[in-house]
Image 1 (cartoon, helix red, strand yellow):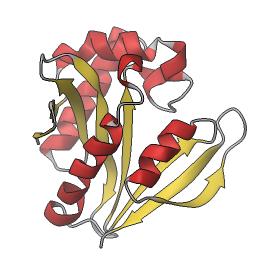
Image 2 (cartoon, rainbow, N blue to C red; image 1 turned 90 degrees about the vertical axis):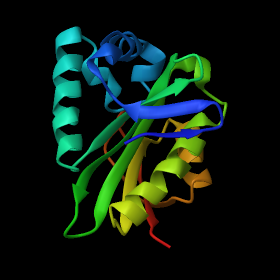
Image 3 (cartoon, helix red, strand yellow; image 1 turned 180 degrees about the vertical axis):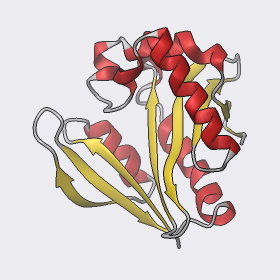
Image 4 (tube, rainbow, N blue to C red; image 1 turned 60 degrees about the horizontal axis):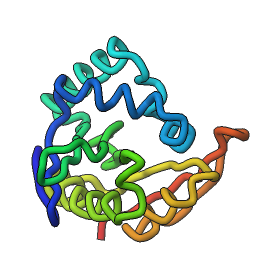
Length: 167
């Protein structure tokens, strides 16, 4: 799966992305704002993660995508995962390098991914969760049309659940 928007290109994650994933996973500001990326802070863990996601994309059960700028610089990650075709549901996730925070990139990328999830894959509902402390991520979801449906966890891993229904 690939698509572009503005001056950005979104493509399948590849092994060439290993170093970018690891270096960002080790960044405390990124890791503390994301529940997933911090798990991939070594080359071995990141490699296993990429290979697992490539298998999921091959079977249309998950998509882990890299966002690049027009010079092919790594900007961040966008994912669609935990899809249940019987229920018509899936989850999204995203994270960006710090130098790309606050530019509207995550919101635009997410808005371009949603038609694929709803129209092509036939999902009826998309879920997301974000740390309660990550107000910028909450804004991304809300600008993309998601609504808060609940709250769970315990500090510092307390988070909001969001959902978006197919229109």
